[in-house]
Length: 362
Image (tube, rainbow, N blue to C red; front, side):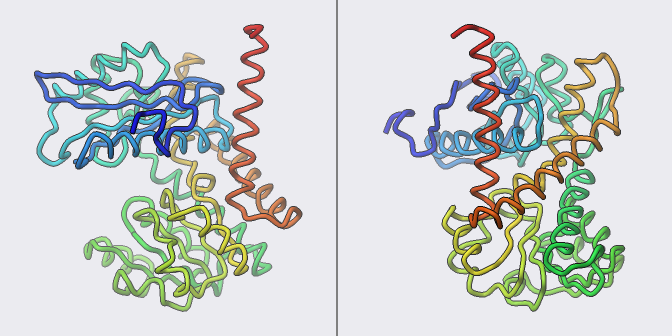
């Protein structure tokens, strides 16, 4: 199978493979779209079984970033990078220096940030040799940990769901089942608790569970039991694809509204949720607070300023307006929310591409 025959290839503008013998770096960068601006997306370090598996992942994830950035109304396109290797044993400062030098070769078409298997410290190492990274922890433009902003967006989305489904302006009396109480999930749990929600939580990390339960009074259940609890809202905040044929019939909730990426194992799961009357809050819409926070650094560079919390708040508020639009159109058009979200993202990307082409008189 060639690159262009891949089921995950979707008119990507560029796919670049890099190898550095000295450090052992094996990396792939996929630029899906630069219609709205430079492609931006995280760098995932994973011990892929094959290069073909890594390629499929980076193609799929880069397209997802185009949609996420567009629906968040950011002047950024979508891209992603993967480094093939074990993040626990194969990292080195020199590896990320090599990665940064290769980013320079892309001339600003792609900006990298942290992702699964990488950290802000890794990005800081790459920053020593390239300007084409975002998500810094130090300096006037540094946006810091994106988790609180991600959690804030998901929390506000839960409030939207509460208003639409339960006719109330807070979470009082509602039960939320949170799957995963790591960085984002823990922040979300605290916000929901303060808003009056009863929480049922699970995680593979016992320390995380105990810490969150101590702060919120949450009920702890075993990881697989989270699908069977009696709750109003299911909030997946850990692994993706937890909405699948094996879990769908077990859920007793009226809505799904969580921070995890790629929650739908397949698109038809979203269709089935819609048929069953379960409101699905599209993941890449409501968890967009994190990328908005990272994007603030690009805004700071363009304006010559520093990190601007008011800019982030403005974009987050706009994102919540888009989420409300998705829900309204879903009802009016009798279509699943994930399809409405995709349509909005695609329309914004197409409009930007048309404007760009017109400016170039193509």
